[in-house]
Length: 228
Ligand SMILES: NC(=O)c1ccc[n+]([C@@H]2O[C@H](COP(=O)([O-])OP(=O)(O)OC[C@H]3O[C@@H](n4cnc5c(N)ncnc54)[C@H](OP(=O)(O)O)[C@@H]3O)[C@@H](O)[C@H]2O)c1
Picture 1 (cartoon, helix red, strand yellow):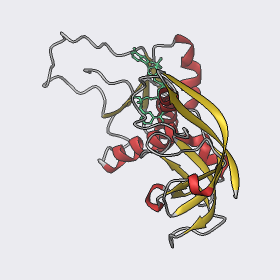
Picture 2 (tube, helix red, strand yellow):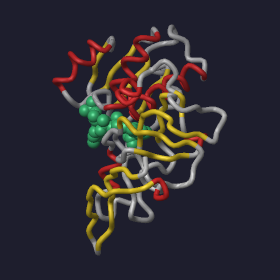
Picture 3 (cartoon, protein in one colour):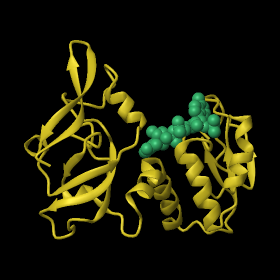
């Protein structure tokens, strides 16, 4: 890795420009784990990083790419050894310091996850949206919501986080009600395991809260927000 290629975003006046540049190891930020990047997805935050006024990048130039999977090539941390398949996302990756749109990345060990038996390809396919869905479902399980407690609603069900949530919840044995604004998404959501597909939930800011009304769902993964 004497030199390697990276997509660099630079701020020029009011514009953000991108170009492939040649970097060296010295250009990578400090960190315990150096990773040969194999995959990095295109996330909404990456689009913001390249949009003037997007608000997610404090200082340019930066290598975007808010997530990455790959193989450890160097590690100062005892938790990782060269050859480990790893994933990293979140924190300031690709916004506060260089991210995944490069052949190499260097990160603090506590921002790196060992993929174990998962390949970098599979880790990337699950992606940040899938990881977020899994955390949501795990939180619900940790909260003690039993599978027979009642239906679990997922809003924004056809989206990235929503569709994986439907899949995971159904797989875990919950009765899933998928809320979507897309009429043509019903078949896909049912094939993922939704027991019922409903329209978007009413979000009337003037609607009176009814704290004593009967609960409709045992829990929810709310990808949209709002006042329901
Ligand atoms: N993707 C990630 O990596 C990630 C990570 C952490 C947190 N998040 C957060 O998780 C949430 C969902 O992200 P996502 O990646 O799943 O987004 P997404 O793929 O764009 O899905 C969002 C879904 O929300 C629904 N929706 C869109 N506009 C709406 C509106 N005006 N009213 C009601 N529903 C609307 C749509 O689903 P329907 O048409 O099916 O209703 C849409 O597919 C966001 O708040 C995001 O910031 C995402």
